[in-house]
Amino acid sequence: MMPAPRRFGAVNWLGLWTLYRREVLRVLKEYRETMLGPMVSSLLFLAVFHLAIEYGGRGGSDPVGGVPFLQFLAPGLIILAVCQRAFETAAASLVFDKLEGIIADTLMAPLSPAERTLGYALGAATTGLLAGAAVAAVLLPFVDLPARAPAAILFFALAGALLHGLLGIVVGLWAAKWDHYSASLTFLVIPLAFLSGIFYSVRQLPELGQALVTLNPVFYVIDGFRYGFIGTADGSLAVGTALMVAINLLLAFVVHRLFATGYKIKP
Amino acid sequence: MLAPTPPSPRHFGAVNWLGLWTLYLKEVRRFLKVATQTLLAPVVTTLLFLAIFSLALGRAVQTVGGVPFIEFLAPGLIMMAMVQNAFANTSSSLLIAKVQGNIVDVLMPPLRPGELTLGFAAGGVSRGILVGLTVGLVMWIFVPIRVHAPLFVLFHAVAASLLLSLLGIAGGIWSEKFDHMAAVTNFVITPLAFLSGTFYSVDRLPGLWQTAAHANPFFYMIDGFRYGFIGHADGSLAAGIAVLAASNLVMGWIVYRMFATGYKLKA
Image (cartoon, rainbow over the protein chains, first blue to last red):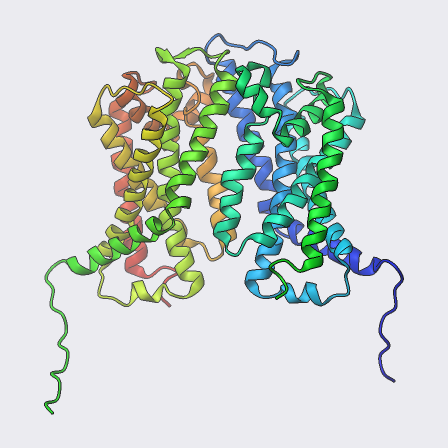
């Protein structure tokens, strides 16, 4: 008897789930690099800042954002891991498949552009959140971190992870060599993250600096995420929330169009 | 038609200067070709670190080692960029050659183990020094760098780059997959570099932390290098020079033996 084509309705749930699972599992398989790596580097940052502040200068620092500096820093380190991991998952996955010539396997599957967008983006976001949880687990024994607004923590973590996942898809589709991938990390993603107020309060910056930072979407991610822990924010949470929703919708639309037109993947 | 004269073997004396020079040139051109990644990226990354650490710690830690924090920090960051790039040059060169299968191009020519060691190591040192110069020049725009003892700057720059180049050769030969290299970089090199007194003065650290710092070769590299700029050292300069000289001799011998025995290179 001839095999019958699989039938599915408006959404290919099995296909979407498979793509999502693959994206997550391929990252978890390399957990030493993808999970342990951020844990070690976050601990290093924490150690360096702790040693520098405790045993430097005046042997202690003024509170920042109303809390001791390490409490101000820890959420930043967690969200940094979330965002970087989400971006790297999405971008590296696509670049690898393209360069190895196996992108055809994914393209051949009966997935609509929307399903591809969701599969890659949610997969990347999930790995980002997992990395964030791993970093949180390793930092919490050392930092007394309150959780004043858990809803904000969840919302901004998810928004930041999705934002970077979608951005990662765009870069992954655009990159033609690994050098493009590294360049996007070194010259775009990492500077945006580092200069977003993860390590310092943006109130310390001169006026021009503060104005420029408000143009950086990652600022709103860290500001809202950190607010969820320490209860204070440097910027406006309402603006942050609205901007996160808007920018994620915009990026999702862009990614959908890229998949629909087969940008750089289909001739 | 006259038959062409058959090629005769090239004769060389105690040292195959042409071969050595060719290997060295290959190693140098390899990184110059992707200067955006190998020279520009360290500049961007180091400037980012300068920005975040001086913004985050600048208020709590105003003077260290008798100079403003940013003047204390700058030499350490330059050194960190130099050693990380020296290590990356040799390790990536060897590992990529092994993975892609063109390591044979390096093993077939008539190069003695000493010449191989010298060629690769000199390439790494060149990258280290070039990165140091580039990063230093750009930093000079932002930080008043004055040179107190140029010979210390030179010695430590070369000694550190050499040691990390040799470590990179060893790492590149030992690794079989990129994951091994990533693990060595993330779990050994980066922590040693971070916890070496780049960001804080080790003389105020409590017992265990201070002992650990003094056992870390990176500490001596940074301490001596920084002394060359600011005229202040946390540890003993003589001990530092001795440790670096000894480490280089030991590593040089180890790498020589690796090439001589064909460890992981020849069947």
